Amino acid sequence: MTWRIVHVNQSEKMHLKLDNLVVRKYGEEFVIPLSDISMIVAEGGDTIVTLRLLSALSKYNIALIVCDNEHLPTGIFHSQNGHFRAYKKLQNQIGWTQDQKDKMWQIVTYFKINNQQDVLSMFEKNIEAIQLLADYKDHVELGDRTNREGHAAKVYFNELFGKQFTRVTQQEADVINAGLNYGYAIMRAQMARIVSGYGLNGLLGIFHKNEYNQFNLVDDLMEPFRQIVDIWVYQNLRNQEYLKYEYRLQLTNLLNAKIKYGKEVCTVTGAMDKYVKGFIKCIDEKETSKFFCPVVSSLEME
Image (cartoon, rainbow, N blue to C red; front, side, top):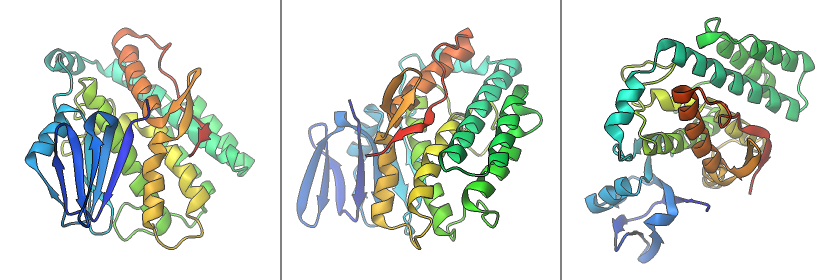
C-alpha cells in the first residue's frame, strides 16, 4: 500500500470527522481517511487545527509537519506512544552498550558514504573523488573514530555542487540549500514517525547525543536516505532561483518514489520501515540479514 502524504497549503481549517481528515479551503471541504495517511505537511499561518484531529493523528501514528512563512518545516508533531510495549522497548534501548552503538554507527556511516559514492558515479563526476569516497568507506572504524563521514561529506558536496558550495541550514539559504533543507526535513519527519512506531525513543541515539535534540536516533538512522534528496535537488534546482510550491510538492513526494532495498523494490517510506526493522534486529540480535543500504542509484521518481 502507498501511504498518502497530504500537502495542505493556505487552508482555513483542518478537523476530524468520523476518522477522516477534513480540510476546508475556499469554501470547499476535502475528505481523506486517516487510515490512508502517513504524513501531513501544513503551510500557511492562518490554518486552524483542532485538538480532536491532533489526538486522532497520534492514534493513527500520522506525522504533522508545520512550516513557517518561508515554507520551511519548523516543527514535527508525532505519536509518542506508538508501540504497545513501549516500556520494555525503552529498557532495551537504554541497555544498548557502547560497543553495540559503535558497531551500528560504523555500518550506517558505511551505508551513507556508499550512497554518496553512488550519486557521484550516477552523474559521472571526477573519478578521483569517487575513488576517495570508496577509500573512506572501506576504512570506517567502529564509531567512525577517524570521522570518515565528515571527510566524505566535504568531498561529496564539493564535487556534486561545486567547490564554492557551502552547506547552510539558515532560512536565508540559496535555492540548493533550501531544497536540501526542505527535503531532509521531510525525510526526518517520516523517519521519526517510523522510529516511534517501533517503540524506539528518538532521544537515545547511537552517535548523536545532543541533549536539546528529540531526534538523535532519527538523525543517526536517516543518513543513508539523505542522498535521495541530493539526487532530486541536483537534477531539478541547479538552474532555479526559488524553491517554488511545485518543487516542495515534488520533494515531499519523494517518499513515494521507488527504491531497491535488499532484493525488493518498494517506496522510500516502505524502505525506511524495513530499514528501521532491520536495524532493531541487527542491534538487538546481531542479525544482519535484514539490514541493508537503500540503493539510491535504483531510485525511480514518479
